[in-house]
Image 1 (cartoon, rainbow, N blue to C red):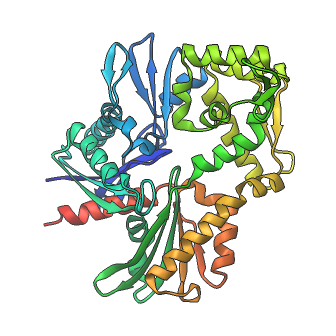
Image 2 (image 1 turned 135 degrees about the vertical axis):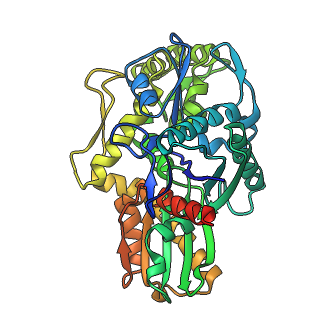
Length: 415
């Protein structure tokens, strides 16, 4: 039996195994050990692209359908709904399985042998503590792995994998906190190292992550430029009504963008343009839907977030694809204000995790950061305020979970 450790992430995925006694991550693209968790259905070539190729096809304007944040669909009713893509009716189980199949094939081509078992990372929560969809989400992910050709799959909490990768075993008696801010979830784990390895004292999580940060930024700074918050004349009576919020909320949400590109939605927006008090803004919304620019806007928001996070007061979200010269200012202080509610949620999550472990903040020796979104200043500022005397470690935030899964997979395969 050979086990492949797989970190199937909301934004990026990676896979690894032990080679020469050390974790080795599979090369997903030239010089890349991570793969964007994205797919693109190319209508002309009639094929499904994934990762960097999927992103490139979207940005090059190839005719097709782009999907991201697939992990957030796990456990929902949407997961098993059939949709027509490339002349076939398929579900999200099929889509994720195809993605995992490609990861498996790349690993096997590189390793020179078959991986029949998967050790998958699992977030502390998929949707929220006590949410009835939790068990279904894990069952859905298991089904995807089996459909991808693995004979069996086991799950390891992602924070535990990160602790293994961070060398926690080298500091017996230490008490640490893993802060794993991914694309869709924020997971917290308090652990203690001892003679028998890592002991997890508590696991807790909240369903917010990098895509939620992007969504909040988009709703606050971008959607008003597309008509959010403006008035539309009442079609069946006198006066005006606020433009419906749902369409703007969906346009700001990665996984919901593809479902806006329907004839019905386009007709509704065309009618709204005619009745809008601020017609130019609403017309921009029509342009986004007609030309399927929703993900271009989302990428622009993400880049603006990165620029503002560096402390730049001149950071902007460029919306040039929608209208020449159109941009939304995003100075660093505005970014902090927008993300304040998320900072409060992180503080609550950490506090609850400490209570569950019956550990005080002063007892935390080390805070280990995992996930690209953990590099947000809002995250690190919040954690430093909560744990001012702890060591804060940022090494390998993008691949720590995959490294830990690879090490754990190797340990399971060892005779």
